[in-house]
Length: 481
Image (cartoon, rainbow, N blue to C red; front, side, top):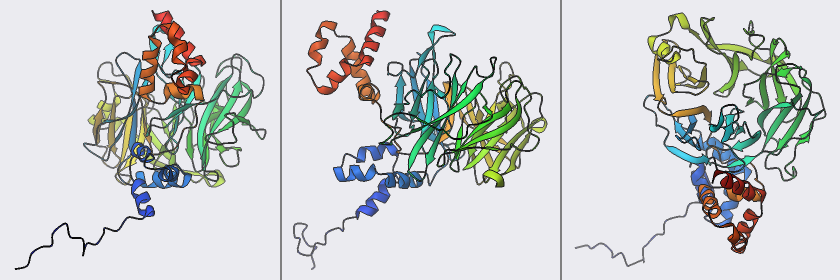
């Protein structure tokens, strides 16, 4: 009778072959960005590998290879002191809800993201606005009342504040600027473009002159400062309340050749590599309906192509979605989708109008799914739902209902481990994680006479207590008490 060999006998034992570092790296590249950050703690060698620019490109391609579009949602808490940044992937009917919470932004972080609304009073808070469409995993948020801009990664929750720009021309109290976020494939770094105008945005006195600055994110030679572009300046005026889009190495803005009244709609472009401006004509026959107000068109990205669309209006019977082919002199526009509002399905009409007062909503396309057969739609401001519109049949299906929550924005983003940049040393301890924010709240409750003793605990506590941010929070706590 034959007997199985005992487990203790290792005479014929064949060891399991170890996976090569290349195979392990390919496995790590398919993991979520938050998990990749944790894997950097394995060893110094893996920390260097998983932080390299090469792995960042591999992870961007592999982590976004499968599944539907990833949706970022910024939602207000009931007390308006917290913002939940939730993510989801909607592959089709019954897609996953917003369950992943990379970061909770509180009103106690500094620089402040949630700021008091000056127009409504101290009891009202204003959430940050999305200034740019996502670019390789990063976006720019604007804290409106604080007049600060922050680079944010919704996959990891990392955030960094942009430094104040330089003076480009004569500074006045009416100066205003527009930002764009792009990626330079030659250097492997993100760049922030800032176009500044002098005067009041869209009102008298007319805007005069223009200047441009560029900030290099994660560039060791930038020294956290902006570079002034001394070449050609734009001869048109960027429209207010529109987000910039980055595609094919260029940042795009909606602009006008004439400001008051707004005439000659055009697309302003900026080459991230060569740092030069250009223009592209809009689709044929496209013009503004309200020359004395902001434009009723907007830009976004749909599956790697620039998209321009018209807001819903009671004076128009059609909702057009145009896609750009190519760039420069060879650029042309394709009409991807035209929705006839007079023949719209009952499901779409229900989605278009608020059930209480039947107010027209401004709809925005999010993504193209099912090989171009359907398009995701949502409200442009304060969205309440996401639906899928079938182009051939006009059937509209509701994928996600967000009417019970206070949602500020919804956008498509890419899973990425890209770093938003470095925060100044005194700011890092206060905004890097929720645990350090909780530590700050606890320490500020202690009597002021023991603050000197707290400096002896460690170097990071000493840096925090001696910083201007500590004094900012102390003043805020004293005023409340």
